[in-house]
Image (spheres, helix red, strand yellow):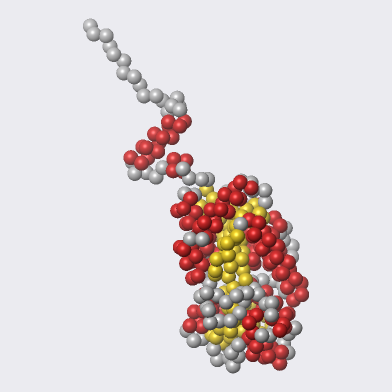
Length: 341
């Protein structure tokens, strides 16, 4: 009788070395047409970018384009999560309270980071102090507009009208505490005049009433206002940036109006990424460098133009300095104007 030959059995899953199991797992997944898990693809841990506003706005567009660029250029697992409410405070606080483990970040801008701490009483956090800057990537100005039927054709004429009206003129904004609201307060305060703030629940209704002549002027986000300017329903008087915008080269800045009181007028929103306080320097530096590379790409910058923004690239130190400057500026505006929400 022939001796029976034993057939060597395959090594069990538990006894196989971890590195080999991972390689075989990736190979089997590829053969089966199944996406391999993150460790097999060589991707980093999931990076969550929290947008403290509803989907569809400029903040959301920037965050999603940024996440797309990080995923494409650096093989990250970057996702966007919207957490709207309370003027951006709900989403901002969520990041403030998140673990400082390099997994959660905030898409921040001047309103949520530098204006809200001065404007909202009773907040249990301060975004400018309790978050860690990672990198800034863009800046957007506002567009000063009046109804097309208005006799006012430039900033100087608007100033004269405000001074003669003695408090009888008003301006629209997309809501109390927004950039348009505070910019209007700063404008009136620098001129030493009064203008009644009329808050709306969104940009669209505020511009509809402005075009219809129910209000006198507005500092509006550029895309929505520009559409009505092109449609012949609004007239653009000026942009609020320090320099003219490349996309609106024929529209002067407010400071160019030759009104002495407005010589240093400037109102822009800075966009950037922030992390919970205590996030490691290594995580901040790595993600910051990646963000700046994505933000410098033509694909990303084309999205900025559509939303009325321009590139403003800066590392963590530059962004921290910008936040400090803007926080001091807007706190003074809130205090001087008595603005409330």
